[in-house]
Image (tube, rainbow, N blue to C red):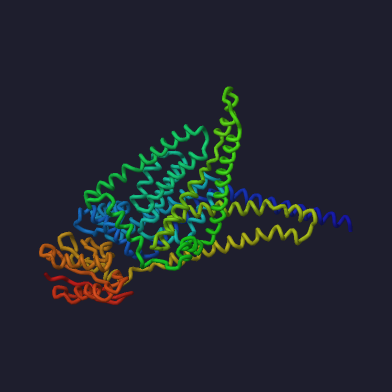
Length: 574
């Protein structure tokens, strides 16, 4: 019996060795795969599938950026203009339209080309999340951070849209990458491009300067050298930032007689009460909560943030305590050796490069929290930095569980209870990870399917109405409360949808001024944009505006149909 037990014991050991050998082979194979390539390639393939299998329904803001692009490259002959919009994306889309019009590409294919540009920006942000994490931490954290970012439904859905959030985020991440690389001039230039694509992204300037000041306070070398480096590096960064922004300000001044007019006017829309959150707690935690709902992995961002903040606190406290010790000593400075303590302290660096991620996260979160206008898509400013913090936090949790000494206790005492006490945290964490990943991918799939398969009737009947009517640059002006037509047809539109008050003034101006009236050929009218927030607007101003449009003798109704709301088009006979 004893010999049989020995044989069976040996066979079990051999089996265990074979199993562990196979596991090691699988582990080695997985570690050899460059997962960032896998993540990016899968994302691009899914995006291409969406291009092939789904129809892109151009939404309001997308149409505005396309329209502004047309307006710029046609010198105001077609398209539309909104003062509050940044010009980065319209300059790109307008260039595509101009090139497409020269080689007779239709509107749908131009939109597809615009989407390919957005896809490249989106793929670029995934790569930059990886590169920044790799630079600050390690490859494991970098891959996890990139994966968390890529599978977040907020990112995936907005990567399918022709909006400023993804391109501007690409330039912010590129600026952070160059900043970490200490290429401050290029970081400044790229930061200015981010600002030109989306004004709030200009906050990266504040974040980078704050990081340089932190480096001055906690960095190596004597205080004079550090101060000189602070001035030089800040000058390099700001010197890179200023030229392009300066050109934008000159353009604004020539256009509006105020360098800051579009930015100041855009800032008023941050207080749009239509998207306000009245509850104080919901307002404060709106973006953290919504990001967590989007992707359960992002809860680990809190852990990552806490660890890095604690690390920063310890570094600051250590430097302060060491300076206090020096102050308590008496120095005559008669001998060179007496400088040794100070020299040793000045050689120490308490600066951590990852502080740029923490600062940017805090600054962006503060900005979004204080802004009245709350929309999920604005959270894209925070998302890449939250993903990096989450990757760091998740790996920390794994390492923390692994550091527990319960495994050794289980081996020594050979009890199942203690063995599972060690395994249980791993098991729970793995279950959570699988659930979080599955849920995010399921949401991504639903976002994929949310786009229609074929061109909807509303586009054929309503948004392409002007394809056969008034098309071309010599057909006059269309007053509109719906900008989407301009994405599908080369027409010139004057928006009057900004508010009831502005809409009333703009419509009145173009329909009563003898010089402007003959130019107006049509009016596109929907009621949704005209929201009221006081009795005067609700009881008098809005009804009066609607009456002017509907009951005017010069406005002949040529299209009316109920979709999600009633859409109307009037032909104007002046």
